[in-house]
Structures are given as C-alpha cells and as structure tokens.
Image (cartoon, rainbow, N blue to C red):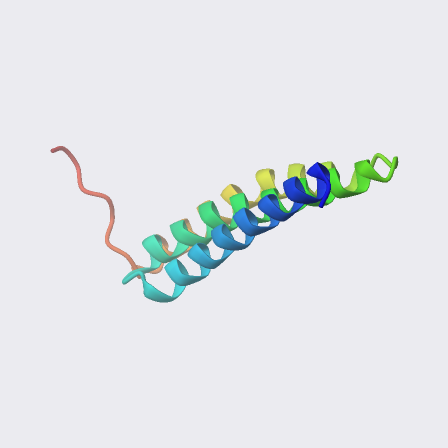
Length: 103
C-alpha cells in the first residue's frame, strides 16, 4: 500500500467517524439546540475530512481537483448560517426557552 493510499484511508476513517458521531448526537441529544449542535459541528468536520481524502486521492493521479475546495467552502459557509436560522425559528416559535441573563 502506497503512502498516498494510507493517507486517504486514514482521512476516510476520520471522516466516517465524525459523521457517525454527528448522527449519533442527532439521535441521542435531548433538545433541539443540542441536536442542532451535534450534526452541524461533527458532520462538517467529517465531510471536510472525506473531501480532503478525495483531494489527496485525485492529486496522486496527477489531477488537481478544485471541486472539493468549492464544496468545502460552501459547506463551511452554509452550515453555521443554516443552524442559526433553525435556532432562531425555534426560539421564535417558543420551542426552546430564551437564553438566561446573567450568571
């Protein structure tokens, strides 16, 4: 097994692990805001690792792939914005209590 294949395999395992943790967090956390936190953070890291593995794998063939960079940029920008909109909508519908003031 070449070093490039080893790097790709490790990145795929890391990405799959983060995606699995995000999915478990979505299923196991008790309320909306914590359920929102698990997938938005862990799954973003997981998909980023999988895209990095794809970039390393295709660059070993001599082809520079820019698609993965564009996907990663889109994901990093849209995930927090989407999570913020979902949290605000939940707070406006009184699905979650408002944040507490003070210590």
